[in-house]
Length: 121
Image 1 (cartoon, rainbow, N blue to C red):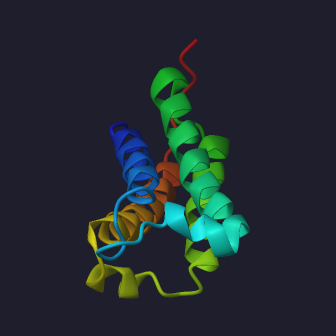
Image 2 (image 1 turned 120 degrees about the vertical axis):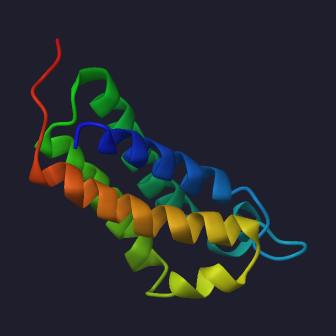
């Protein structure tokens, strides 16, 4: 259970990288800032929060509060995508990375909540 925190880091990073890769042939999620900037920044912030909590967990031991913030980060992404996460699997590589990262990351963050680690100082 102690190595699941690395999965949270990887999922946060993959989701963040997926935001900058193509959703379709000529459009990235980053390009959607032109007409919906708030949505981009909230979703990128959700991935970044989960990534930050995973990195802190690797450095100091994944504690329950870190896991809860990672869950919130991934949940914000799911909610902002308005339940269309599975639709992302039919689009480009960026969308696939974002979809897989949010689903796997949410599951792994929940698992890290079940058994937190002791603090490494």
